[in-house]
Length: 428
Image 1 (spheres, helix red, strand yellow):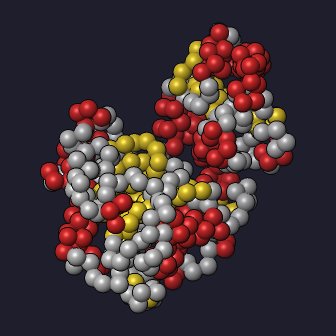
Image 2: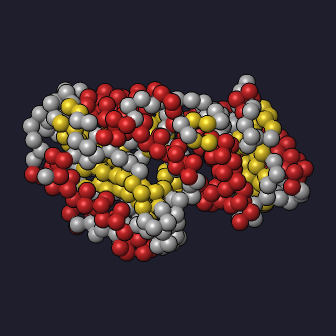
Image 3: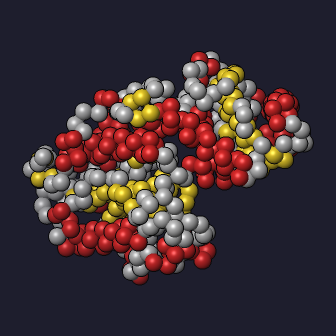
């Protein structure tokens, strides 16, 4: 299939778009038993089993999860994801080896019913300052008394309990009830790191939807529109296909593409500028679609300097993908990773690669030069999905290029997941 955008430029290698021109089938409730050949019940039970497996491994008797992403991972339930991220604990999950109790937000208990992962749904009691005001300390203590009594009933006195997003007062109050408090992030992140085959179907469905959105965004590019107008094309498309939200607003044109991490703005896109994009889409079924591309606004051709930036970024991504294999250590990866030229080192992306599932996750793989201070060791294993990153732009340079690919670690190497093509004109 050959597509032509509004500027008359041919978009090569868009066969992936032809095979998924209609994605209406993915816009279904997550509780549906099956969608597009995906056994969603199996996905949910696999993930719940992974969390319990890692709880046993780290000797954790119970976890209280309030991060909505972790709740969705463990149970498949979702409710006001962004709201609940900043209003904790307003919705939370108590999980033990034999019991899973969802404490759902006021008026929302019906949302948690019908899931095979949930044994019981109760109304939550929000223990936050905005909910309790000056009575927050008393509210936290009452919350902790009730939760500690329930944990004792389920697993016995003096349990080891993992927490990840509760406010400090609540955690202190739980400790005062005789519980041993530990961080739940390690067991939960280790659980999330290895995907099942059915999870991979969810990830691929999310990626195809995000790629459709990026294709619409690319076609919409024209000098004179703002970065925000262009970014909204992707947002509208992925939300229409049952995505949750875009986690960032990373789209920049021209001089705002260097340095990276400037959010989209009302800046007007000029002629013949580079436009860098990182998708960061929490897509359908709750899975993260995370790839980056850089485009050229036209109507003229890219300059030699623009093509050089692009080709260098492409080289970094290609090299680092080529060395990934199951069984390699994080340190080995850092030692073998692409050596960033000095003139691009100051503005390098802060990671070489990172885990990707329902959001960005464990592990972080660092550049060789950053490993001594920031890195940690571990093992790349089959079933991990990783995003291989590159940002290339000189310190105080005029433009930069962001590229990124999402891959699956297989038993023998990698499988490329993100199919959106690179820009042939910028690779010449």
